[in-house]
Length: 86
Image (cartoon, rainbow, N blue to C red):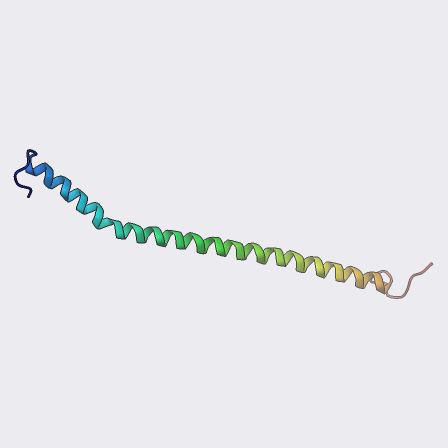
C-alpha cells in the first residue's frame, strides 16, 4: 500500500493492480496476435496454391483439347477413317 499520499490508499491500490494486470497480460496478447498473423499468412498461402493449381488445370485442359483437335484434323475428319473425299 502507498503511504503518506493525499489520495485514499484503496484508490492507489486499485490503480496499481490495474496497471499490473495490463502489464501481465501483454505478453499473452502479443503471442496471440503473432499466432493469428501466422494463421492468416498460412491461409493466404494455401489460397494462392489452390488458385495456381486451378489455373494449371485450365492450361492442361486447353492443351489436351488442342491436341485432340490437331489429331482429328490430321486424320481427315474424325471417326470415318480415310482421307478427305471430294
